Amino acid sequence: MEGSQGPKGPECGGSTSAHLQQLSEEAARRGSLSIAEMMETIGTSSIAFTILVLALPALTPIPGPFGMLFGTCLAIVSLQIIGGARHLKFPRFVARRRMSAETIALVVRYTAPGISWIERLLRPGRLPRLTGPAAQKLLGIPVLLLAIAIALPIPFGNVLPVIALVVIATALLERDGLAATVGLGLSVLAISVTVGLLYGAYAATSWIAT
Image (cartoon, rainbow, N blue to C red; front, top):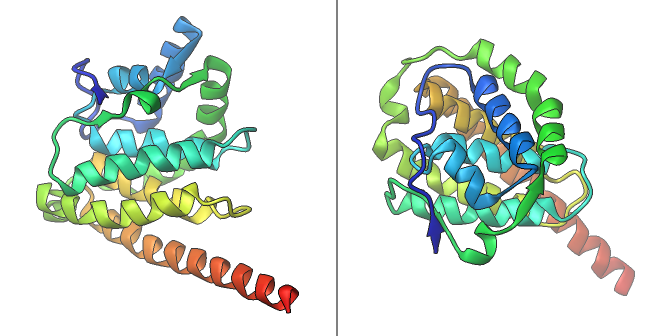
């Protein structure tokens, strides 16, 4: 497993959009970033920001199996959250996967309006117990289920799971417990829709086969 002891990433407060822009600038400086280098840039102790960074590419219309890759990364993160890890680690074959600076810039640019809109709705320190260490462990369970949904090759199936993860991540960053509760509700909706799509695909396949 590979991890990073790089600079501590954003834990709460500040602008999430600004931190994403910082990541894009670092990618531009290096030309590309591996998953491990992204973790070095944002800090492996910033679990909420890690969720955000790994979820956003799955929402961006870029070619390649990004849903499967980042869904797998999110599943690894979620298991560590459930286990109470303070610093995140990834298997070497995952940590070495790279994204070009152009792709990272596209992700940040494409998702910036939505992130800014969510930021305006957040209230730092609201119901903080719902974003504390114990709550984070429990939130690891829906994060795992959402990660599996993102990894599945369902057309447009990433949208609701990613939105739910973005709300959860930004809520944890700002210690907004009410927003975390909204994110949990969105998670239930996203998982239900995913199950419905899978059942629909199975029923259609069975009908064609008969």
